[in-house]
Length: 177
Length: 273
View 1 (cartoon, rainbow over the protein chains, first blue to last red):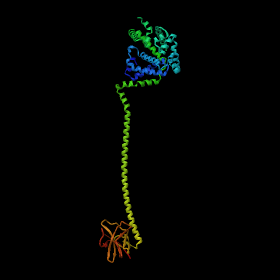
View 2: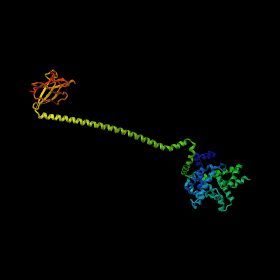
View 3: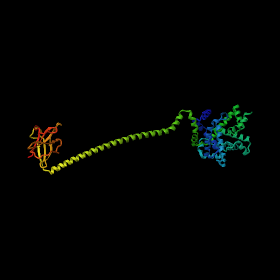
View 4: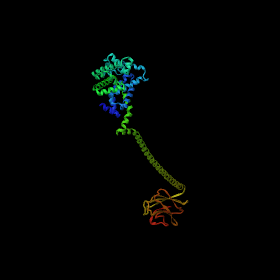
């Protein structure tokens, strides 16, 4: 299904299209949230609400302002960050690290990850210390680039370029698969 | 402006992370439209992020999918409602069918109840009819019983009289007469009490126009002392009183009897001495 067809279907609240969207993007979108929120029950709750929000707000999505996945991923990321900063989650949960996440994944579904041939661990192993740090804070702890810049005294431009560099490494590794 | 520098600046990544201000976003979008390289880079980065997200996490549980689809059900319904023709009918069917079921059930109950009412009404009338018939039967039996009782009492009193009285048995036979060779009738006569009974043994039945008449033949000639019923065999039929008789005889007379016997039609004859 083409993206414009998909969007048109979602706008008419077509059941089949919505199910297609779920099948295609649920895993990725849930990962955006579960990277930030360690508790899987809360992560699923946030994902539920975010997915409903995506369907209900599809009319306000403008194709000219970015691709569909980016728009959806941002809704999920923002929902997760909002939840993380709400009183419902204690501050200790914020100390989610890549290792915690990877450990959690492996203990939950370690074998599954191996079968699928790729794990976050392998991807992360290819990053250098600086890149890994940036990715951990932005992708796993829900920091914005300016928050990382302020909290760790890293110039904004450096944060930006490290994010870019990290993504380039990830891209290369993902392409290889 | 150096496109490559712009791409390298990391602004596009932040654009994808939604961390740019509205003004910066507009700038990226305008440049992407203007420079295909920027658009291509955005597309590539988005692919990368999607692949990274896709690869880096577990799938949500099946329950979440069910819950999400259930939550979205009103949205689907709203959209499907007025547009398609088949779905509203379906939805209608879902709503109406319980009512229909109740209606069908109620109808069935009503039919069964009516059938039962008719059945029991029929039974009631049948029973009433039978009851009436039984009452009538009982009346008939009571009547019969009364009659039997009367007959018994009569017979009993006759027997009493026969046993207690001084009756003489006079056998009358038709052997010597031309009318009925096998005719045989007995007369019981108590001369003192002047009572006479007749008991038919064998006597042909007559047409409706004739009767058997018993005669007591004395000094003054034959005297009719009653009609004999040939059907009442072996019972005592009381006749009129007779004080003096040398013989008894039965003749066939026109219905009701005659003043004088028709001797040509003498059936039986018996002498008292």
